[in-house]
Length: 255
Image (cartoon, rainbow, N blue to C red):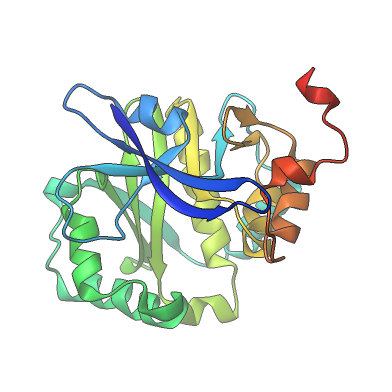
């Protein structure tokens, strides 16, 4: 893989200089290696043809330590009255132009994504990417109501984008159940990890609370301290003029 850094902001008053880390997947690189280094797929610029990843505070579940929690079981019991099922397709075997599929996904994106982050152009771009390897299709009484785009190989799965009929949200925690069902399925398939995307702000707390065996990428390694991660998420909205390293009360950990 080719790793490069892009300059961001600078502040000489506090000697704070920002660089964003990216990586370019090369032909012999495995997804497992790239994700393990803290990278996630970048699709913010649709003109890029290379397979680009960005480094972020991300969350993954170590499936050797995962077991369903009481909250997972509660959510599962609540949807037990529904006849839910899912089918897994390799992307190449799925009809990406199916009008019902596209409507469910784009309607969800219009209702739930902030600032039109999922335009039709970006949606098609994501579907065209090497990092979309499989599609989970969810059905209610045999009729599709939701989809999950994943990047998957024989050792890991990245739960990337989820779309579903928002009417079901009024009565059931469908989104949480879908995420749990993928993690549970991946454990049954003896995969090693499920990656759950970024872990920033309070909106990410449900992922942190709900799944045992979680760890977050802290810039250097996978950190299992969920108490620390919760504290970080709760303060992400606070404006800061310096990086978190300079906010430390003590620097004894450097000795």
